Length: 197
Image (cartoon, rainbow, N blue to C red; front, side, top):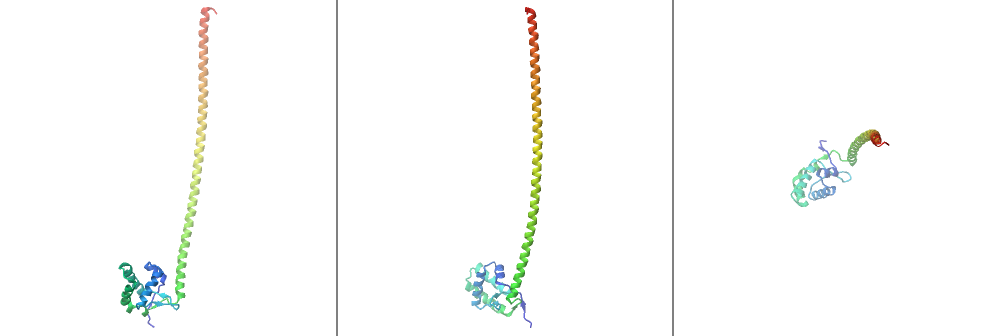
């Protein structure tokens, strides 16, 4: 048995490759089949695609989307060009649906593991960010405490300085008043001597 085996792709994989919806892919396949193009099918009649089918579908896409061919005309061109090379002469390496499901399941698990790894890294990043925020908040609180203490000390020194200044002024005023009183007494004494009082 020298059958040629080739990797098979699901409709979902092909629609992602072509960047089209699965319903669009289904319409294109129907148009091609109506014009004699053959796709390999599973036991449950699901289409499987090999590399040659993807090449044909890319060309079909170019005709329909790039050159404005109708589906029917594009299907005729593709069917006539690729009919002799159609995938009926090949056996895809993955025919049973359960094998496709296993491959899809494996891929889903890989994606899930990748997402879980990303979530784990994101959680670690969030924890580090939270710790950094706590440290920053503590620093800000410490800084505010230091500023408040410095302001209180400065206010106390300022109040003390103001009190001392006021007391000094009072003392200067009292001394000045005392001198003025003494000078008045002296002057009074001089006039008292002259007038004999």
